[in-house]
Length: 439
Image (cartoon, rainbow, N blue to C red):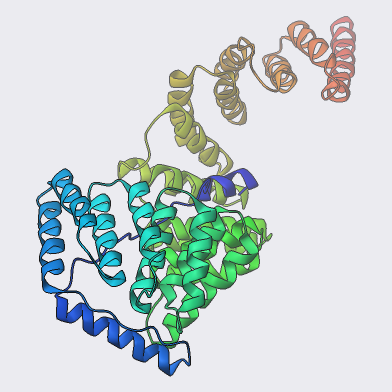
């Protein structure tokens, strides 16, 4: 399998990120919000940080925010924002102001105005005496909002600030930062974060998410680290056995020069009935042909056509004809190649058909088809067709026309030597026949 096939197998372009962007948390009860604030203060004490004096949310403020939330949930976004705007006239402590901005972000998020939601979150973070838990969740949500808007540098800055204030970041956060580094083409920085996330979930006795392994694979691909990519794809196959991973593993083996493993990977997927796309089945047949196993190549294509996976078009029939011809299944090959030539009307297919007839010493059919092949101005190797036509005419005992074809073939550097040999042989044959006639 060539490098171009390898590239097609991945077709990465820009990494398609699977980003779960949750809406900002809905409004808590006043008691829960106050308890959260106090818990945050206690956690800060344990970490020997400066204690942030906890503030509480008054019931009347909670009711106003809850009313705005309900309007947003009912898609009355303008009404919700008007209600929150009116709260600017109400005297509030810093915590109440922060929660008001948090609700503004909630409304903007639900109406999918992510830029406005991000600005509201920045106002939350600018609030003095902000509870640590609220600072953490806001900073993380802000990073996600930048990411969904493809603002990767601000997203990275926000997420790094979040890492600085969190004691034990979870694996999802490491993956998120890895995604951002990938989008910024900081592939060397992306890899440690993704590997850290995978290691953390494995320590918990869980399997990593498929998307995480895909990011890891993409980074290896960008770094052209095919050895590591082989290991990553094996992990993907073990956990998420999908056809494309077998195809990609086969392509990696091709890059590593492991031709036996390349074919084995594709064949294993085929035997497990995982190859359900025409391109996959055709690729396997081509791999069999490249490894000089034409009978298996033909068998795979015939089964693919029978199952309706491989279209019975000229291109695929031509490939099938090649496999059958190389496998010396001439009777079948003639039928297939004749059908291919009729569909494609391409010189190369008429030339192949002429070759089969020549093998069977069916000179008239061979001459008809090689002549059609030469009528195609786009025939890639016309010199080969000229040599074949000369050979056919010679066997039809038409020496004069055979000489004409070999003279034409001699004009091509690739065929000059062989054409001269034939012309010399025909001259000697003509002299021999003249001498025999005189005798």
